Length: 106
Image (cartoon, rainbow, N blue to C red; front, side, top):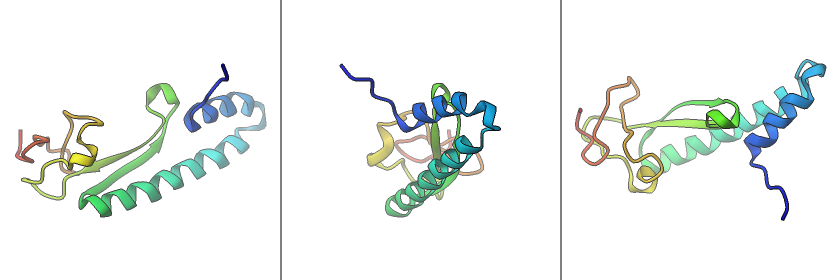
């Protein structure tokens, strides 16, 4: 069976390999991964009618390259298309926790 790595896992390995080179190669690819994630997150947020929060790159064990999504207003439930991916989390961009099913303040 072959070894299959995600983009974030490949970046983790590149980070370790590139350490002696001041992480210059790693930094280039990590930035490109963040740029792609930002573009995808913007597209999803627009399509789902929600807000995009921060996009960041961490090592894969801590979540890898991730984007945060938020309700645009109280009363906006989490869209069905993404609800199953993190079913208990939903908030306004200011951090106010909302019920994912109703969008009401918890």
